[in-house]
Length: 148
Image (cartoon, rainbow, N blue to C red; front, side):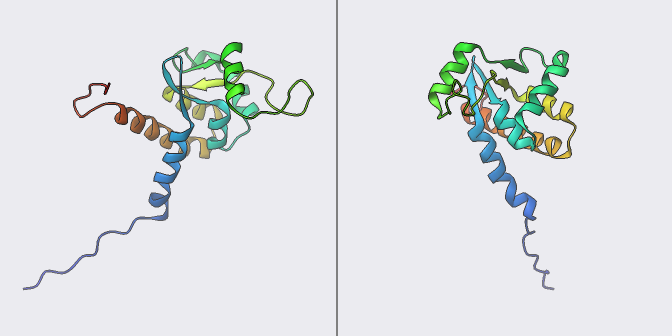
């Protein structure tokens, strides 16, 4: 008797989009103060909110953001960051960022999604966690020892 042939299961549209979205998150991860972080402006784009709204919710819920979850950049870090990217002249009021950004670790990004309480933020926080895990996996070998 012949066995029935089963074609491999098709990936849904969402499954095909996940790697591209995770890749986008991976590009947003930077290392600051020895931590892998995502800046508030990048996280706001991922969560579909304005940066000022994200920062507002962080300030309103500071007790939820422990120092290892999120931190605000120092003036020196902010100056270094703005010299590395193209920004407009803030002194002449031509736009640009006037306040120091927040940096979120993996746990801080998840906490930010919870205080925003938007469906997109919750959905994207899963991708952010996956990206952080992939980033960590790239830096360790199979035995869990950091690659030097």
